[in-house]
Length: 223
Image (cartoon, rainbow, N blue to C red; front, top):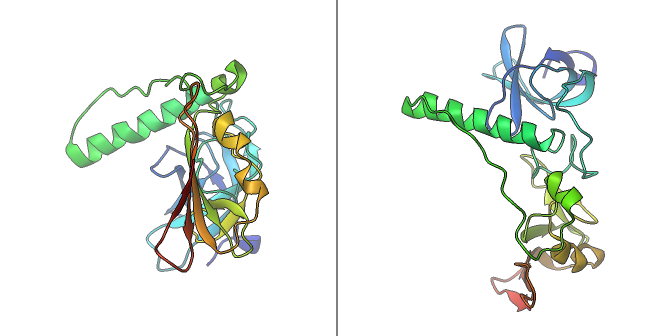
């Protein structure tokens, strides 16, 4: 791995790419950067690199020139080294939709030769979830199904990006209040591999929790 001090590079961030990345270049080499936005200048730490690699990967760890679309992530583990689930929590909801539309448009053009005007529409939070209008406007509180991974100590969390490592969480901001109120991360799930929670929303909908053990193929479900 090469680059500056501790594998740090200063990069001008270009177009959005698939998988929560933006494209930058360093001495002619493509660098796919996460936690950045098009038009920004960032200091990024290399996460995958090598002299023979076709491209490098990096995480933006410092924003030197911010995009007007940048916001503070609602989740404390949404940044570099954290949860790999939410690619764009550092972008305003309208900007997230534009970025996703740009990715789909580029994929259709490159893979299928189609020139299509793509628009990603805002999807309302499911009725009856109890999500506040303020959270809904921020793109939070919409997910009715959450699958947690458990680490060796039984703490629940989510996998880091391109890693098996589990990042423990106290709550997931994009989950509906019904999922959060189950309080699953407050317990220790020693001996379990994963825990899935489903709370569809609406009066009397109930909840389903399915836990997968580490050592057997059986599952335990509770409603």
